[in-house]
Length: 575
Image (cartoon, rainbow, N blue to C red; front, top):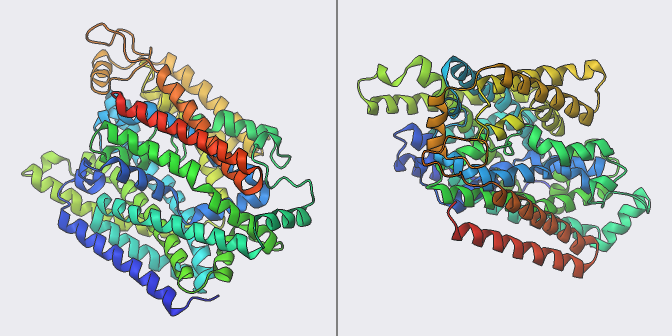
């Protein structure tokens, strides 16, 4: 079904909501960089968490899931489900530490943790590295996903769609700052969930229900097909080495946006925007529960239906958008198009704001026009906010250019994972081990980049072998450099410890009162208990759809009880 007038009315209504949110954000005031990039640091946990969830649902996500299911079945989703472990470590170990750090960007943290010229160089390099090549690569594959959907739905030429969308988003985020982002995130989350669930209902109904879907999968792919397999270790479609890398290595070894080991990126930005430590922890927990436990199955069901509905489709990722057009009536098609439009707006606006925060806070403010160049702090802040708006528009133009070079979503995912392989352990341990220094991080970044490009030349062709090679070489290199270079100064380490108060045994002698620091093991236990609950909920939903009703309900009920217990523990204790 083609777009009808009602669909355009629905989409137009969403654009009006965006304009209203931008206007409200401007009236609310964007006087300082804290206002513009951290929402005034006063956001409640539910808004922080939902904003994180909304940002990680970009237009590319359901398309990528569709492509994954088509090539590797349901178990292929462990390529991103494994990040629940790093996400939960962030909840229970790192969220409160990020809030205590009291920085505006995660790279500003570098000069809190390290000292001297190496820290200054690392902060500047990492700011520009994340703001431009990495950030623009991410926006590139996100844009490809949205362009595929709107090209199928509206019939418009792809580049016309891309340019119009970016102009709309660029102006919006330049005006509204982070507060406008989180407001539209909140709206987007509910629109997106309603839209994707409705599409899943229509899709399953179109093939005659879940039982008929199972029968069609068996008819097309044989009785012994593995598309419904949940366990990556038992799926013949997935090599054992790949499954081992996903579960045993990737979540702690690789930097990936939204799932950084130790937190970071725009997830850290949302923590900075929380009003206190408990709200930072609560928001991050809400994000992980919604992202990994609640949201995947509507995407998976539509992906399975697309397999049996369009068996000869060359671009499997596009099957999701084709089902939208073929199944949804007028109005609902517009609603789902708005769901994807709002998801795209949420992700791109976050990345424009996040990327610009690095340029302004960690480069421009330090080297071009430092605060002492102005007559007063107020004038400096007004200038920085004004430049931030123009820098946002400039980054928008660069993102449009980078989008030209992408044609698939999953390829972008794997490229980022490979480039960052081996760096994750440094980002996790730098909070809890005093011996790590700026050279540790510098070495990890450089060696990971070189090793990921060298791996294919050395015969490591597959994703798993490349990850193992790059992670091994990078880890050995940064550990050797750590012990071969001097530790950070006593003054730097003590200032960091006194402000952040990290737990664990890695800071002997740094407590001012001589008492032992907070133990880590109770938090680590909560990580794995919560991971078991999320996995149980995911598997339980699968059982509801394709297995035992009783077993599915039991698993989901058990998962809910575990999460209630975890939340009560967080509420009752100091974070």
